[in-house]
Length: 503
Image (cartoon, rainbow, N blue to C red; front, side):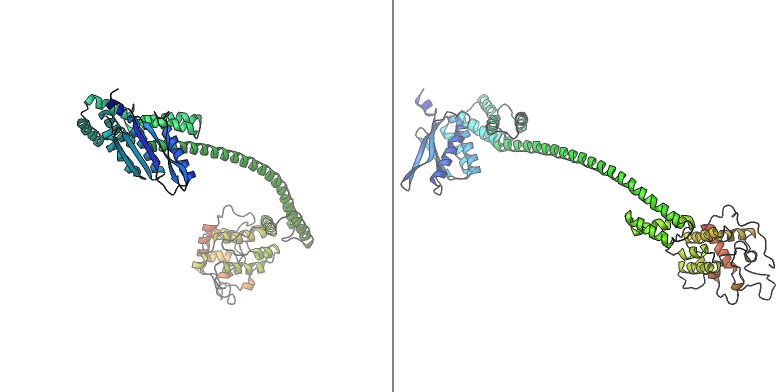
């Protein structure tokens, strides 16, 4: 080997930390980490180190290392040192000796250390210089850009390298995968195989993958990013699976609990329904012959209500429902209370029931006891008209009520005067008082003509001068009844229509 060739066989490298603030223990740790980093580099596993020392406070401590380096490993070494400075920017002295020539830089910035590559080119053979530049470009982004390729072409010409050699060196720098995309893909393929074996990766496995990234020409930050992305994805999938399993287990538990509750509720509801049915039967018996329970029955019902834990409101609702079934509904669209009307009709107090009918109808339209006119009649709620009608019809066996009056009106072909005479609300029209009758002359018993009650006293201006219903009121009332009540079949209790005697 010639002296010139021998001088390029090895480079002398010294790396020394220039941080006065580091304690001896911290300095020793940094030197140890540096030594381990260098030994991790491909081709430098067998490197022999000499430790550099410094005296401080009458003590000697290690502050760096020196070693021989193959020229082609210089870019790799500088790259690792740059990575260290990126991670921990300690002020570091780097000396590179090639024969009689020495390069030296002291810095804590990775960018400054990258700058020494250009100076190192002068120490290396042309092919080493070209390869180092190509590897530097490849290391930065994993591929060589068009601009970088142009720089390499200028460098090739300056170094007097032929195109074939330069192409081979460039291919070596790029590795077997020429583009960053291809390098990423290959690294990810191997990474996924390893992650299938263990996740997260053991330190020694990751170290091998870092070496793979170096050999592929894939920047370490890229490799680390791919690893983190895949690790997060695996962890996310594992967490999603865990959450799904938890959700399924919780859902199964909820279903089982719901089934247990359902069974318990069904059993409880069955028992509860039996209690409610028994209570309803007691209420029905108590109301069978009386609109309201007798004192004795009230005591029995209250005792049963408390034993079976039936609320007072629920008991009241059941009682009213059954009372409505037996004695007639008192529904109202506007909150009118028809219980007194029902009570009076049940007692056969026909005149008082007639007066109460006027009272509730005026209340329904908030008339303040003023007579209802044609327009007001048309505003009466159908629900309320139906309630009044069915109560009167029920307790008169169909003889009284609005439907009975409807039937009479149809019988006389909708002639108001004939209707009034048919119901015996009016006498002979040729009489001195035009056939008008006083309210007290009306009949308040079941012997009255069909449809005689309830009267329409709610539309009369005065009852003192006579019970008088205008034709317009008659027409309006039956227009509204036609909309609200379906006459259907004639009431069996109505019977044949005939004019009252003296009409």
